[in-house]
Amino acid sequence: MALAALRDFVRNVLVIVVMATFLQLILPQGSMRRYAHLAVALVLVLTMLQPLLALTRASWDVGELLGQAQAQTAWAQLQAGSELFRQQNEANLLATYRRMLETQISDIVALVGDVELIDCNIAFVEDREAADFGRILRIEVVCRESLVAPVEEVQIELEPSRSLDETQIEAMTRTGRRVQQAIAKYFLLTEDQVSVIVK
Image (cartoon, rainbow, N blue to C red):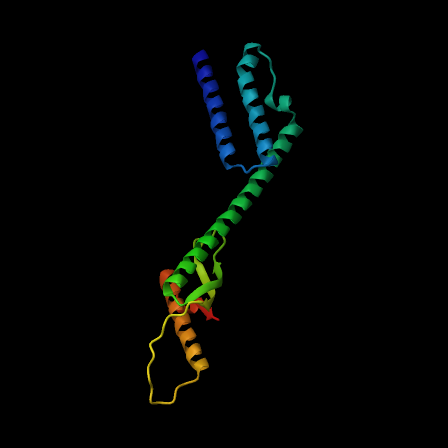
C-alpha cells in the first residue's frame, strides 16, 4: 500500500516536471510564460504536499486550497494564452513559408538570367485545417532587366530593321515567358497560374 502510494507520488511529480519543461519550450517570452510558471509551481507544491496531508489525515481539498475562483481564473488565462500562442505560431509559419517561396522564386529568376526580381505575390491555401494546406494557387512576379545586359551578336541585314522598341518588347516578352515556364515547372503549376511582368 505504501509502495503504491510512493509510486503514484513519484509518477505525479515526474508528469508535472515534464509538463513544466514542455511549457517552457513552447510558450513565448512575456507575461504568459510567468502565469504558466505560477500555475505549474502551484500544482507542483500541492502535489508535494499530498503525502504530508495524507500523513496528518487532514481532509483538505486542492480546490479549497487554491480557491475555486482562482483556479478558474488561472485556467482561463492559460487557455487564452494558449490560443494567442497558437495564432502567433500559425502566423510565423505562414510568414516563413512565404519567405521560403519568395527565395526560391528569386533563385529561379536569377537562373533564367537577363532579369532580376523586383516583387512577387504568392497566393496559397492558408487554412491549416484544409487537406491541401500550403498548396500554391497563383504566383505573380514583377522583374526588371538586369543592369548588365548580355553582349548581342551584330548582324548585317539587307532587310529594313525593326525599331529598337519592338526588339526590346519582343526580348522582354521572351524573357518573361522563360521565367513563367521555369517557375511553373519548378512548382508544378500550370502556366496560367504564373503571371510574369518584365519592366
